[in-house]
Length: 336
Image 1 (cartoon, rainbow, N blue to C red):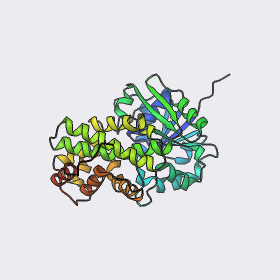
Image 2: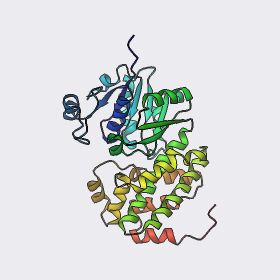
Image 3: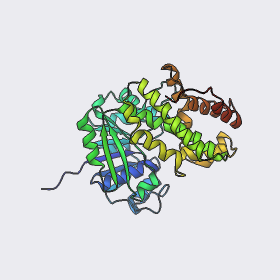
Image 4: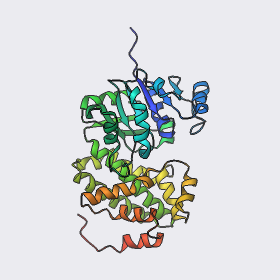
């Protein structure tokens, strides 16, 4: 008897979507990448390489691509979403009619929707009408280039329904990628969203020539901000001490492969927001989500001084020097 192979549709064929597609294929899942551009889909199908992001990495033959969302979703057990958080609502509204009645949606997005303050899983449920047990989140210290090189990594699969979390855990478990499960979706998503903002701050500090002490300070106090917000929103503080919290925070803040840290470094070197956007060349969720994260903090009466300063800097309300001064001149207080 032939062994059952799950089918996953990955939207889209960006760097992280491609990396997760490779993980799933290596774990024994048939994968269809949804690409916006026909030349990307054609190249993946003919050469098994993504020419835009990983032209030198061979993808498994069980990874195919299409520009047709209906074709990608046909018979899909899982729909993995790896698109900018701010375009999720509009894009998913167009794809929703093609989603099967039993398909599980897995979010890779680490941002907060501007205006609504909703996390990605909340937007997904609002747009599709899906119950919570069919919406999961994958989050952790996962740099796409390292994943493509099959370097060891781990992540958290979070879903209120443990069975659903275990299903996707099995679908993406490989010798180099170790997924853990959790039921704390809120904690996982907030850890992922806040760490991007903190990584901007670390990048700025690095670009300004500040030292490792400043980096350690920002990471540690950034974790405190994320934990305060997540706890106020009913998340388990232990989640922020795990892979989707401190693990993701450390990787994103310290690696030159991190687009948020890279964007911040450009700002620290004196580039404008527009110049840094051009130089980074990829979506930087921290830039888009900083104000939304700060709004959540204000709603829940939570102090997030790093996030507040970064939001002001991104909106050109303060200069680099004023931002550094604002953080260092805050009144002294107990650490906890």
